[in-house]
Length: 136
Image 1 (cartoon, rainbow, N blue to C red):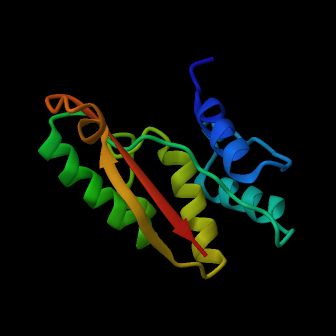
Image 2 (cartoon, helix red, strand yellow):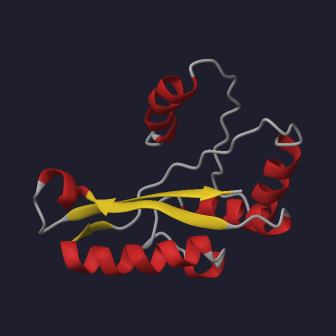
């Protein structure tokens, strides 16, 4: 009931891709290796796109959030899933599972964007972090 990743992802996908089929996966308390295995099975088609939705840090001051989110971003692109927990990203389970999958597939990642709500609305005493990453 409290999960909101699909309502965040669907408008983005509808705008960006126009026509697509979706297989939504919620990780719950699944293990990192199970998530990686499911992603491997679900993406046998070369046209598959995996979208993971998660905020980064929550309710820290602007500068602290920037530092924590930069650390998290480096862990993501270096595929160091052991460094990412709920403090770093509320969707840490899905992220860790994806990073194991990405390592198994010999992917590499890059940071596309990194910001927080203070950059958008200007309030900097309590912000939420956002990042966008591309893996190929």
